Length: 114
Image 1 (cartoon, helix red, strand yellow):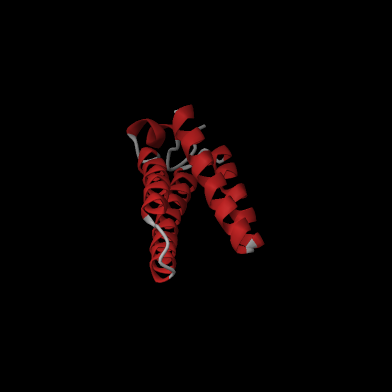
Image 2 (image 1 turned 90 degrees about the vertical axis):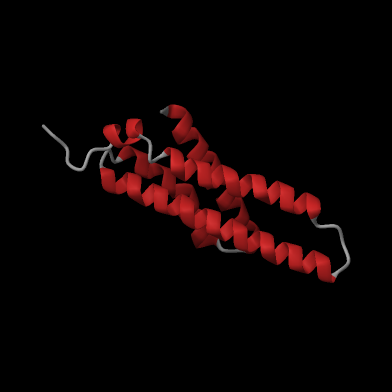
């Protein structure tokens, strides 16, 4: 289970770096703060984390397409950028999918039983 969390933290850090480079400081802060939701051991926090990972994957796909267009228009090579960003998209998507495992759902119930 800790590997799943670590993969999400890595994906969140990559997303924060992307937003930092774009000058979006509030989105960077949100990306860095997102893993703190792991401390709320309820299902809603797990769903928010999954949603964040899926939205981050979509953002990475958009960045990939934009970068490819810019490089093609400039006549510069773009294949290595697609490979690198494709790996980042896959990692981020995998981080979200792994949070949907039975083990994670069992650790994050709908309500806290006392």
